[in-house]
Amino acid sequence: MRPYDHYCGLARALDVVGDRWTLLIVRELLVAPRRYGELLDGLPGIATNLLADRLHQLEAAGVVTRAGPARGGVYALTDRGQDLEPAVLALARWGGPGLLERASTDQFRPHWLVVGLRSLIPARRDAGPDIALDLEVEGGVLHVRAGGGTVEVGAGPASEPGAAVVLAGTGDAVLGVAAGVLDFTTLAVRRGQRREVERARRLLVPARPLVQPLSPPA
Image 1 (cartoon, rainbow, N blue to C red):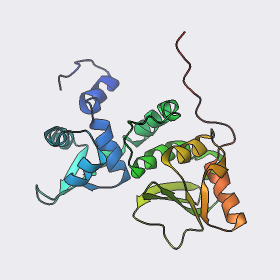
Image 2 (cartoon, helix red, strand yellow):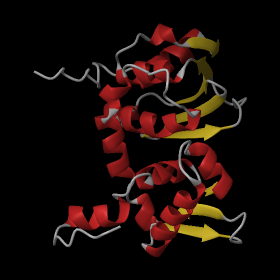
Image 3 (cartoon, rainbow, N blue to C red):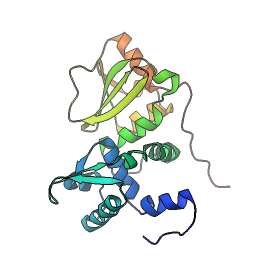
């Protein structure tokens, strides 16, 4: 990538992560370390040679590290790469209005919601009530754990027996509830007593909508 040659922190950042696909690679690695094939699956539309080029650039910049052999190694974010999370979450939240309508051509992977939910479930209201919550979303499962004033969101292969509440819905339903634009009852309750489900609702649903539709051009 041709550098901007601006003496500006934003320009320096864009020199590293401003290329197409780069921040989406960071999104994948914010969820979990990934093998090359897993990155390809999580980035539908990227060419394999382009992914290799972007990973090489990120390694050279100290954003990504690779453990293991060239084939079959695992890619992960360095500490400097992890420092991109607040910026990625802010961009995800800023782009939220564009998700209020899901196009038929939109591709989707359930683990993409990890970044979306991290950007929407606050550390507002002191991180909400303590609860272990799982969300079954279009063939995937997200794990939401609130406790000690923090909220952790991750992706996993199956609902865990220890989850007090298991809810199910489409990706747009989960995001809509977390953004406050859809009613909590849009999600189906798979497991949970009434009190526990209410705690899940208080965690997921903001006091007022966090995302507003984009204003049409004048």
